[in-house]
Image 1: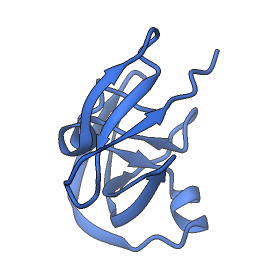
Image 2: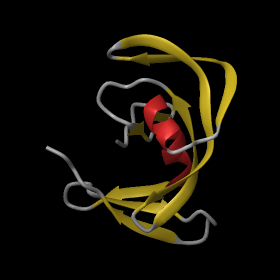
Image 3: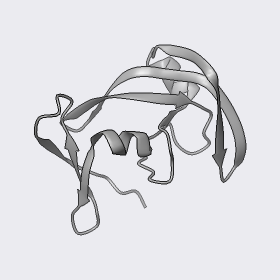
Image 4: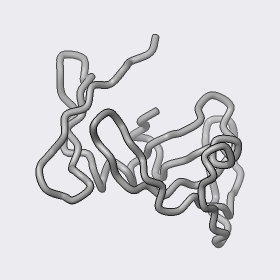
Length: 111
């Protein structure tokens, strides 16, 4: 999920383990959501992520989430997102990992 209301990007512990991601312990980071508040001290560092033909490096805070396995937040958007566009904002223009040019990615909008 892409969430412009999330300050950070998140991944569940289960998916992080399934993907054998490198987890680093950090200072406790408070997490606030509609479900309540919690904290995490685990970060999945330097995760290579692919979205269609785009790829980039993302750091994820590791937290339990009831509805999603991954949330891409403002940290990801600030680093890579150039623009949303399309009739239903169903396309992303993203910076390449090397920072040269852009890549067009179609989004699937669930019901």
